[in-house]
Every structure is written in structure tokens, then in C-alpha cells.
Length: 211
Ligand code: CO
Image 1 (tube, rainbow, N blue to C red):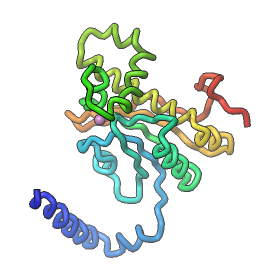
Image 2: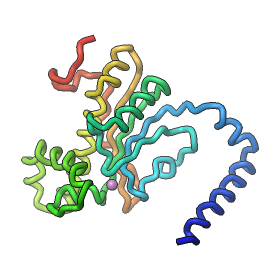
Image 3: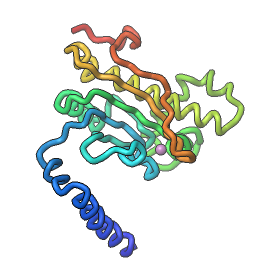
Image 4: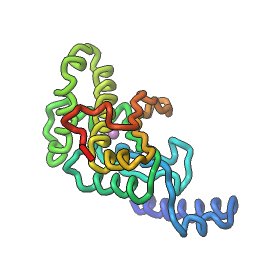
């Protein structure tokens, strides 16, 4: 355990040296401010690091991660990070990125009792209920899990769009696109689910705000 801990510090030192060798001003530039164009909402899974899988650098992606990339409108954490990303950082894109082989999705599909997390996973069970007809028609268990992973991303995309923060930004004429992606941990590829929301026209009337 101690070795793991020390390895991380040593890794940090080596990384700083490599960065400075490539660009002596690297950290000076980052120290002043950040202006990422992308806000990423992903899963906490250790196999899905936003910068690494998109081959991007520090400063390029503002990140929020939780178990199974859920966007719950009562979660002050995700709402606060989203609000800061949109209103202060003026990001151009919000990306919800789920991933296949997600432990959270698998747990939500089952009936095991895990503890506190059961309440969090209920958000995903609700996604299942909303799409039960489609999901129950898929006989293969792995395919059904993959589809729930995709539908959970799409619901999170629309949960982002339903927020007052995002609708307010659109009303102010800001260019803000919300996307849904799924990362395949077995292949390394990102799949764009083709949901690309840029205004509130696709929201049900009940969710639209009058400004
Ligand atoms: Co996951």
C-alpha cells in the first residue's frame, strides 16, 4: 500500500519534469486562469479518465464525475458545477459520457442491496422504468445492459437541458451544445449517440421555461 502511495508522488515528479522539458512555461500559463470549452459529466470509474481518453491536456476539460454519470436535479454538486461551467467559464459543449461495463448500471439492473448507494442507483432504475418496453424486448442480457447504459446517458443529457441554468443560457443567446457519448472500455473508442441538443425545442412543454 505504501508503495502505491509513493509511486504516485514519484510519478508526479517525473510528469512535471516531462512537461517542463516540452514547454518551460507550461505551469506558468496554467497558473493564471482556465478557459475550458468543454464540461464533462462522466462516471467515477477509474478506467474512464476524461483527459486521457480524449487525448487532451490540463485546462481543456472541466470535469464532474459520479457513479454512472447521473444528472439528478436535486444534486447540489452537479448543479453547482454545471452552473459554474455555463455561467462563469462559458463552456461551449456539455458532454455526458457513460461507458459500457459500468458497475453502476449493472448494479441498478440487479436486486442486490449494497447500502447507501442503492438510493443513488434508483435514478437508473427510474431510467429503466421509463424505457421498460424497449429494454424488456432485448433478450440478451449484455445487450440490454449496453442499451440501458445508452439510455441513462440520454436521460442525463435531457436532465442537463431541463435545468434553469442551461435554458437560461440558451435564452441569453449563448451557443451551448449538450452531447451524449458512450466509451467502450474494451476497445478504447468513444461512440457518439447522436443526441446533440442546442435549444429547448426537444423538451416536453412541461419542462420549458418562459423567459
Ligand atoms: Co461506470
